[in-house]
Length: 192
Image 1 (spheres, rainbow, N blue to C red):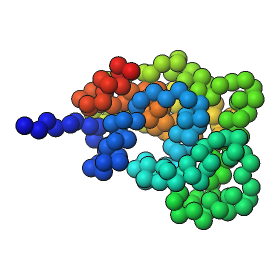
Image 2 (cartoon, rainbow, N blue to C red; image 1 turned 135 degrees about the vertical axis):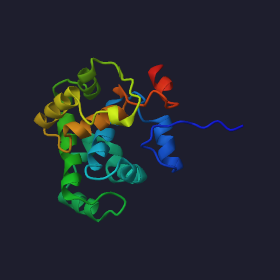
Image 3 (tube, helix red, strand yellow; image 1 turned 45 degrees about the vertical axis):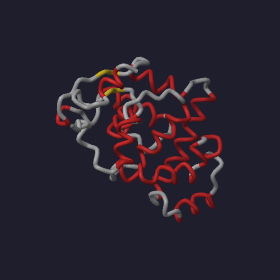
């Protein structure tokens, strides 16, 4: 007898998307560069679905020097033009430039002696918030913490970091556990 695996209803049947849901989404990430990459990728989904960006994620890492901020800030107009011709990513000039602006903000924090991971995790007091939602209708699209994060990031020059994008980011990197309680990942994430 086969048991049915219950997942959050936002996934689809694509094994790539299911693996992302099962193995990545909601798992706490503390590495500053990984958080930077994830924040930039979440910004790329503005007006699109995360599924669209997920399918292009490997291309993004290749196009943006593995999301190393010190390399990205050196991008020239030629690099921007190269990115605008790259069919493997979303070719939107504002989004292309946002990754460069975000890298500058990341490095500005670093130059002040502030660790990017600590800066971000401070918005949830350094530990994951364990929500207990039963349905997708209960899950917010933004919270006071995501609004505060958005405001702080924008002050540093980051773009494509509105409160909704920040909340999606917080969900993805495990700052909040928004797996529904009946999802097979809820307890796995809660026990991390």
